[in-house]
Amino acid sequence: MSYLIVDYETNILRYKKRKASPFHPDNKVLINITKEYKQPVSVRFLPTFYDKDAPNDWLIGIKPETTILVGHNLKFDLLYCWHLPELQAFLKRGGKIWCTQYAEYLLEGQSLDSQMCSLDSIVQKYGGELKPDLVKQYWEQGIDTPDIPEDLLQEYSEGDGNNTELVFLGQLKRAVQQHPNFMAMLSLRMDGLLATTEMEYNGLKIDEELGEVQRVALQARLDEINAELEQYIPEHPPELEFNWGSRFHKSFLIFGGVAKYSKWVQHTDPETMEPLYAAKSEKWPLFDGEPIDPALCRLDDSGLFLLDDSGSTDETATQDTFGSGKRQGEGKTKNVKLKDYSKPKGAQTDHAFTFKGYTKPSDKWEAAGEDAAGGKVYQTNSDVIDALGNRNVPFLKLLAERQKLDKDLGTYYWKEDKNGDRKGMLTLISEYDGRLHHSLNHTSTVTTRLSSSDPR
Image 1 (cartoon, rainbow, N blue to C red):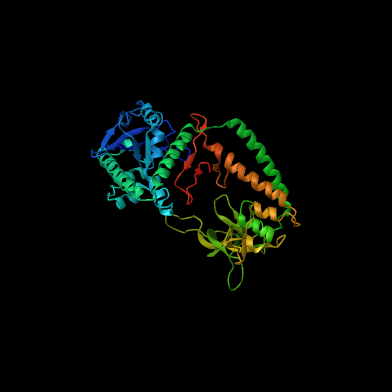
Image 2 (image 1 turned 90 degrees about the vertical axis):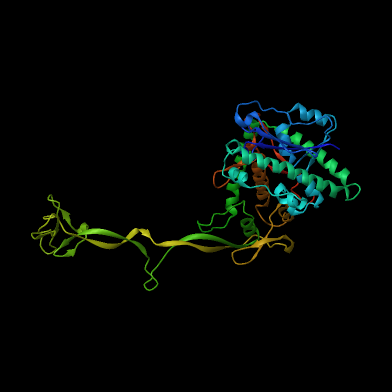
């Protein structure tokens, strides 16, 4: 067995939910890291590190005698070099791979701690040392790899190569001590990883225009159903926004329950119970030292307020003025504190509304959580809806259709959340090749089954 440790440092642009996506043309391999048995780590800064327009091809360093390529989260690196003839020739002659992330997951029996594990999280177990995290700090701050000092990248890359080798050799020792069929199983799993790498690299060709036509039709039908379903929602406070996507609200509507909502309530004086308002200050003119509301006065051409005597229209009082000083002759005023009726005092407070429900639930449908009064919440999935089919609940067929349409739109097409952000398959199509490069994950479940993300 002749192995080659491989690792790449790349640009870090996030694209279509992939960090440092290999499917964006501005992301390239910048540093080629390799290590052979009993050889020092080779760290090669490629032309792309110094010139972003340099060709995106390089020699990996696979020798004719190399039988296994080893790396941590190896699919990431393979997706970047899948187009290279050197890699394809290696695979065609029967070359194998060993992903230390995948191997750890299998050796640990798919435990939660081993799922999608990082190299740093397992390296000390195999005698390695944690690398300085300064490079990671640069990346976390959004600083791209070419803008990080080369000496730091050199040290970081050497650490990656040495640590990956230590983990691989430790895992290999553990694997041969397992069940006699363990190594054969692991080899087949790694072949499966190659298969999903090929799938992700090629992607899925999507007819985006047809997809949008279908999405519009589905959304129109969903809008119709939502309008029809509104009649079955009991009259409720306007502050309570019923959400058909909420499992709690659907449970309350079908089986009854208490929903919490927030409502703005004006504060009152605890003694008089009069509503409270914010205070404001106004300048009122003074007449014989007393402030008078300007609304009760009239303004003279001289700029002074005049106040007609309430008992005689022939007598008019003039606003007090300054008798001397810089402001001599100007009208006197006083700041008067008043209630600002445009600004009532209050706050959002919790309220509750009780849904009577349409039917009684079965205990086996009980779900996690509770309503606003501490009562039970029940499942409303398709199995429950089917089980309710022979009960007199008038909107079940509509609800079942709505749930399917809503799921399809969010999964295979797109829909917007309350913040206006879109999610769904059609949002992940690359504008560079018109394909959907989804993620097929090997180390994310307790059963070893594949999972898919972006889209799910």
